[in-house]
Each structure stands twice: as C-alpha cells, then as structure tokens.
Image 1 (cartoon, one colour):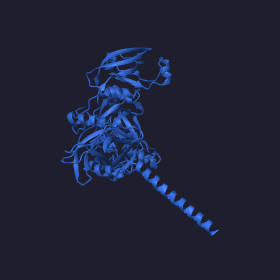
Image 2 (cartoon, one colour):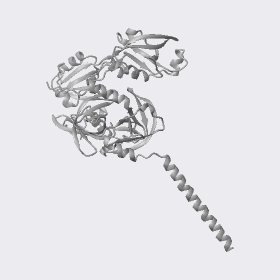
Image 3 (cartoon, helix red, strand yellow):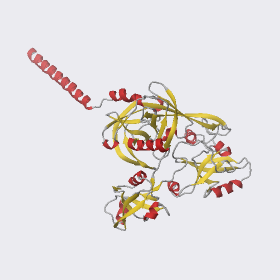
Length: 481
C-alpha cells in the first residue's frame, strides 16, 4: 500500500514538473512573439518634443450664461467654453476688454538637426506664442513657418543645432495588423509611449478629403496631437492627429496622417510659405449601388460628379454633372475620396487625362488643372498685419464665401470674417468664423449684412448666427456706435 502511494506521488510530482516546464517554455515562446519597444523608446524618445501654446484672448465677462433663461448646466457651459462665447465662467473671450492668456499642449518631432519640427496645424494655428521643450529639458521659443488646415500639418522652427532627428519611413509598406507605437505628451505627461496595431489604411474621414488616414488602436489622448507614429524599425510613418471618442478619451480609434503627405506639405511651406493644390471645380458624391445600377455600371468604382462650377477647369474641359470619373491622370479612382487627393496632388497648369463614364459610354477628356483657391485663414502662418478692407458698424470685416466654401455648407450662403474688432471682438467673434445670419435673416451678401447693421440704433442688441468649426450659435452683440 505504501509502495503504491509513493509511486502515485512520484508520478504526480513528475507530471506537475513536466507541466511547469511546458508552461515556462510556452510563456517564453509567447514572449518572443511579442515586440520589444524598449530599444525604440531609448533611441528615439529624444526626437520627440513637447509643445506649449499660448494665445492672448479677450476676457472679463459677467460670469453668467450668455442668454437669459438658459439652463446653467455643465454640458452647456462646456459647449460655450469650447466655442469661445463670452460670459461663461472660466471662458476666455468675454466682454470687458481685459486680456487673458489661454494655454494648451501638444507634441511634435524634429525632422532636421537645425530645428525644424512637424506638428499638427490645430496645435499652433491660433497661437501667439509657441514654446518647445526638448527631452533634455531645454526650452525654446518657436517660429511658425506655416500650416495647412486641410491636412492638419504645421511646420515650426527653433534656433538650435545638432538636434536628434527622426528617420522618415514609408507608410505604403504598412500592413494591417502590424505593430506601431506613439510617443507624445498626453495630458502634458512628456515622453509617454503607447503601442498598438494598424487597424486600417487609407481611411477617409468626413470633411477630410486630402488625407488617407492610418487608423490604429494606439492610445492617443489630448496632448498627443502632432506626435509621431513609429514602426518597429524606429521610423516615423505618421503624425497622430485625431481620435474618435464620445468621452474625449481614447477608445482605440486613432487616426494618423501618413508621413509622406506631411513631408510634402512641410517642403512646400519651407520653400514657398504656402500650399499649392490642383483644382477641378466640381462637387462630387459617393457612388452607391443604386446609383451605379441607374447608370448601367457593373460596380461602384469612381467618383460621381454632382455639380460643375461654371467657367471652372472641369467646365472648360467638358465635364458634366452625372459623369463618373473612373481614372484621373492614368490613376484609377476607386471611390469619391480618391479624387480630391489625386487632383490636389496635380500641379496647376498640367493637362490631365480624365476617363469618365457618361450615359453608359466611356469617354476620355483632357482637362487643364487650375489652382485651388485658398481662404486667408486656412493656409500659412497667421498674419498680424491689419486688413485693408473696411470694418462695419460692429467691427467686422467680411468677405463673401467662394463657391468651394459654400459647398462645405451644403450650398448655404455665409460671410467669412477677415477681421474682428470693437463690439464684435468683445462679443467673441474672431477671424475665420463664418457669419450665417442676423436676427433670423440669412446673410446673403456683405452689402446686405452691413445695410441691416447700419439700420440698428445705438444701444440695441443684434443676434448674429456664427459658425465655428462644426458648431453654430447665436452671439448677442450690442451696437455701440
């Protein structure tokens, strides 16, 4: 009986030892399959910088909700705070004329040893002062060379030499499922590394026609904006730009600008101080299965022309509404999002071969590419020089929207704010805003708007409907002269 017990115990111990040995081996094998980011962090952390931005704004409101009778809840206050409307506790932009400094944080990375740094346009576009902090704790004031809001890329410069610079990679070699890592300053926590995989490539986002985004599940949070996305070779393949989130924190949906797109923008900014893009003058829409069937098409490849601007390059080249562009400059157009990128990359003046499908028949056109009109607030460093146009009674210098800008508003009229002073500035309206209406009346033209304002007596308050980004709100402005 004793011998049987000893034998059973020995066998059990042997089985246990064998199991432990197999577990150790399997864990070791599993560990070998996972990437090691330590070398990447050690070698490339110094190439990433922290960016602090300061903006001087007007403040000193009455500390209340701007409209009587509105609920003073937390969400409403946050909405007004983000929008920049006066009279909200803690919100810069109120009346009273007193200046306050508003600060924000971002990231960037060094692309040349003499101090050129890439970041996001939304990090520095509204800045009065940009401060760059290196990993060795040195700090420098940076000059904004220029920025491009259409791609959200900005180039800044610090006066320093012999700086560690990143190695530029090739984003076209990225594969879905490949490991990538980000280094940046989420919530101001400098040189923070997060890692994940490539979730998708060539992702098109609403209102972002010029960037084929790299989607990842890397944890990106406020402060990471403008930081680099590395592959395992330590090469930068993208700039971390956007996240999708209902809460404001990372939920595993992050989007990066491919580095080849960013480098092209930075080269143009460095050489010319502005961005030049090709332009056709068309409105396009996605080709659905139902539309493809109605056009007698076998698939949904191509970009459907929904409208053609009169006397624009497309109109002069023979394009018509209802045409489907299937090739541009010998490159296949698989979806509507492919066309703006292809046209934007073409040099103005170039004659491009365009293949279209019209009423079931394939046609080939030759179209001279125009230069895309630009908004004064969209591209290049912000100018501090005064606007020559005359300000109206409430201090607004306005310009009617171009046809391209109206398309972004689904054809609606609006007036672009070129400059804001006096009562309008004190109320929180600033350069780059779009005026949609006045006292429930749509703003059709600068002449009409100014005529309405001139008819308002001193001391009266007008309600101006303002569009900033994707948010609209009526802003009350008291006429003071």
